Image 1: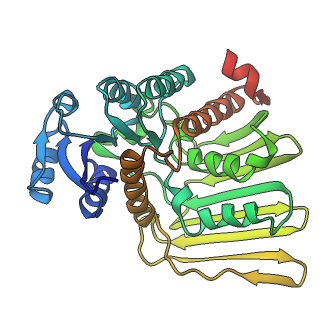
Image 2: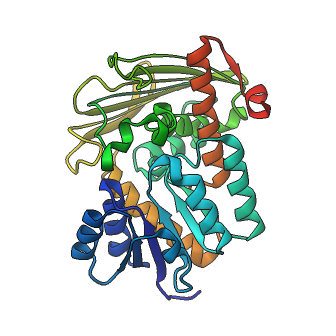
Image 3: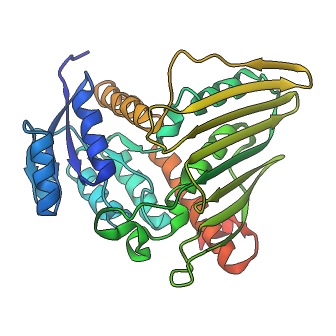
Length: 348
């Protein structure tokens, strides 16, 4: 196996884009070759922070280069499909932040294009790499709670930040606010209940505390049905800090995991995991801390290895397509106040 560093290009340099840049730069297996970002202010910040990387004003200049192996896309949601399609058409591997796209058929196009060109298509559901949330999956697969029957994932946190140029509060650029944070929890629920097959239907309710922007859903809850099991996903953006809980119940007990800090990117969280039934409870010990930026660093390293070895990423394009589909189906359920069949929605 070659020991040559995997050369990354980065498209987008807002707050999370800068974290991507740092993760790529600090990874022992990768090198940050170029950054593409539109605004003059962001270009200046990128040059100051990463003087060894070329900083470009147009992402097409980055894609046209032949010295880049993989491109990380951290642009506003509305641009994901356009940029991702161009990256894959150029023959480069892709790490695409969630959501893959704003339409299911666009996700399907990206998956097909990656397969046709034999390229890695990874989607940024970094919680799969968490020692905590990934640890939950390991315990499920070991059978410590028997067959999973029920998943509850709940988040209580502070309101969204505005994002570069206020994009995160602009529905035309976001697509749907269910695609912002709940998308991670739809991915976890499907991952945890993978032994039950694919989801069959979604029901959801939501409301907003913003009379001038009622589609910005501060409170959101969904029930996702599987064969013989179901998941509940619930979120509020009208709170404080960042507090996530997961409870996975099976035929032989429950896993209870929690993570709490002032911010998802905090390096000083409190977190834990217990599992058992009745008085027989085990507390999981962790050798590795957990947090969004730690998982991002692990994600970058994993993608570098996938590119070098030709293996599957932690979250594939098919997985990313499913999380997008579930969010869009949940959005339809909110609008209609009716359950939505996944098969019927995907074919519509």
